[in-house]
Image 1 (tube, one colour):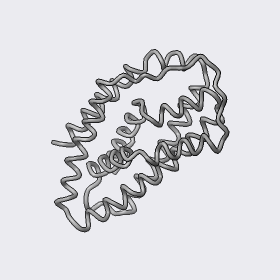
Image 2: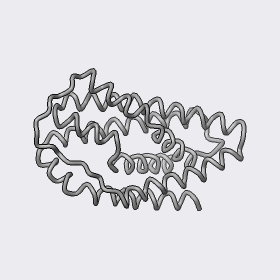
Image 3: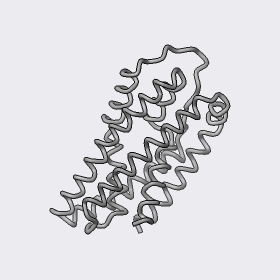
Image 4: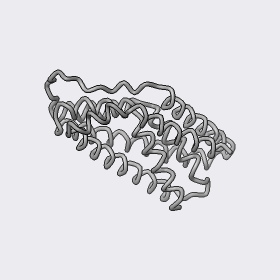
Length: 200
């Protein structure tokens, strides 16, 4: 169980560190106001709760009804994680800090932005479902799968809060903007490697 938990958290962390819609939104809000950045993080994590619940419940139904379908999801999941890894290796992050001053969004607006950005992104459910289907066996109790889901949400919250706190420091912004593409490439290597291991 501990080994699977470490892998789940590692894959999720690599996905978080590779720039995507959630990260871009946190960038935008945190660089105008730390309070708005925190509100955005809370919204994103609430959306993540929905995706995790959907993935855990969906896998429970699939396992009960069709082992063949479960195995199909497992292999499709490995392919999807490989695809995400390749995107990290070949894409350009494109996150830049605008020198212009922008008005900060209020707490409610930043929270809604984070919530709907995450909630309306079906790739989040697909990614979580892919990871869970690889590392959790059909006989894994629902309570254990739910525990993995809770840990995943807590990790997401802690990572985004730490990221926002660091973004509030100008020195970190400069270094992250400079090295974001190598960071993304490193995450891509990790995801591709894990996808290949999962497939075989």
